[in-house]
Length: 158
Length: 62
Image (cartoon, rainbow over all chains, first blue to last red; front, side, top):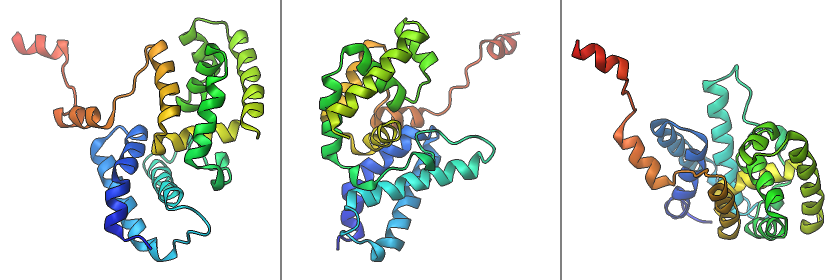
């Protein structure tokens, strides 16, 4: 089993990078980063590598810590849709290789479709805003978005 | 597919897979969107919040 110091050295940058992408306040991000490693320390005995890789396990703890932060600090606001519980998928797909597959499938798309997918799912922008950014009509973006999803499904074999 | 893509792009913020990051960066460059990297964010945080207000400054001069 890896020890906490090893995990800290290996994952601190990834954990902080993820938190900073979600939370503007640097002080809050630092506190959350500490919370993540405290949780890791507490739960390390429960870690089972037959169920999840260390990478996925650390990611899940980090993500849940960010979700808890938003629920605590802004209980009345709707959670970022990319963070909502509903979007959970099988953790088995959360692997570097799957991200590589996604990169290849995206590269095979026409440039505009690729941009729509990145702006929609990485940046979390609604299609109306994407249409403005790209200087296209909403209808054109909607059509290309649907078509891009079909091509990605085929390209990624999912 | 929608849920899968949301989860994968969320995971990318943690994993920073280089090939996928290149795709994301090229889209951001094409549409003039760029995220600050971690070092740049720390620099901004160290500089403190921006509180410049032209109105405030004019009042101080009076």
